[in-house]
Image 1 (tube, rainbow, N blue to C red):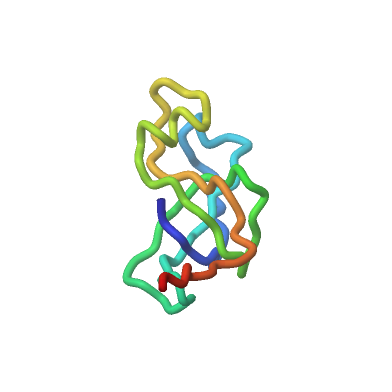
Image 2: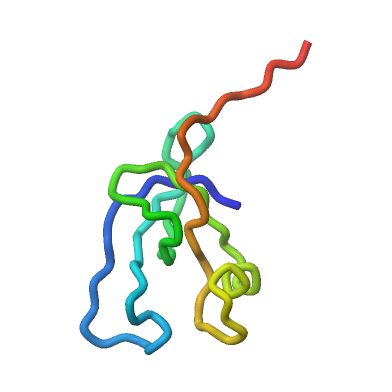
Length: 92
């Protein structure tokens, strides 16, 4: 799982039929403190996320296909949740 911040949408006129009716978002990877990490992902949105929101991304093809209930869909990353808060556990 990856934590990221939604930084944009992807729109296309020509696409694989699998992506019809699915929202694609650009997600910048972030650290748990909110600082940018290196890289970004393009992910299918299953959580209703929007620009500026912190999200949880499943970045593993087989797991993403299972979430989307597809045996052979051309997908690697899917947004599975919107993060409300990140807190570090304090160990004594």
